[in-house]
Length: 143
Image 1 (cartoon, rainbow, N blue to C red):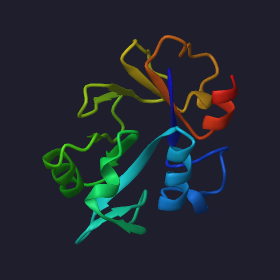
Image 2: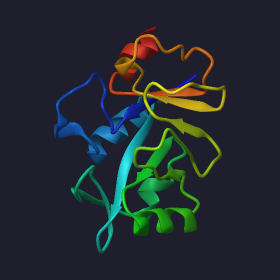
Image 3: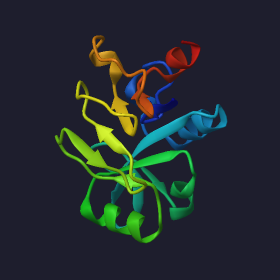
Image 4: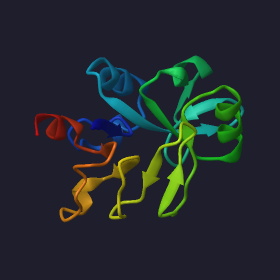
């Protein structure tokens, strides 16, 4: 099972490290996958609700990044550049561009699912899913 850091979090830190390219690189260097929020606003940016960190397209091509498109333009650019990405709002499930099922917290899981934020639902059995996306990747690596 793979561990994916939600927006670059390591141990549930404050939001100052969220989607920060330096924090993302740190997690990648620890061999942890990272889910990041990508927006297009005259250029490509990382940021959950607004563009915060401008990045270039090559940054997004890392094999361990899971890019959450926050607007249509970002999704279109990433798909055209073969970047692993997905789009969702409040869907129970969505499919990533590489065929994985991104499961909303608390939803039933299969072997091809990414269990998002398992810390929000202690009763969910994520032992057979493909991976988890969590604010606490270091904790789950130890387990």
